[in-house]
Length: 78
Image 1 (cartoon, rainbow, N blue to C red):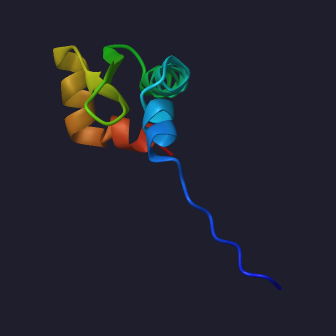
Image 2 (image 1 turned 180 degrees about the vertical axis):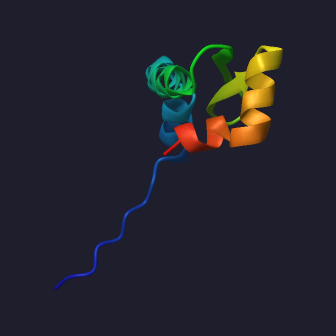
């Protein structure tokens, strides 16, 4: 079997990681996780220096207490 050498286009990968399409994918995943958590949780995306990032957090006091006691966000990742 022949050896195959793959060389990535760094600028292309960087553009892909910061693209609006990647932002839409991350936002969709964050919303799905937020929905699995229940009421009181929020989700958002932003473009950082190197890539798009998504986050889910407990927004209300009830949700913060629920997350502290049950690790709700962590369990919703599975």
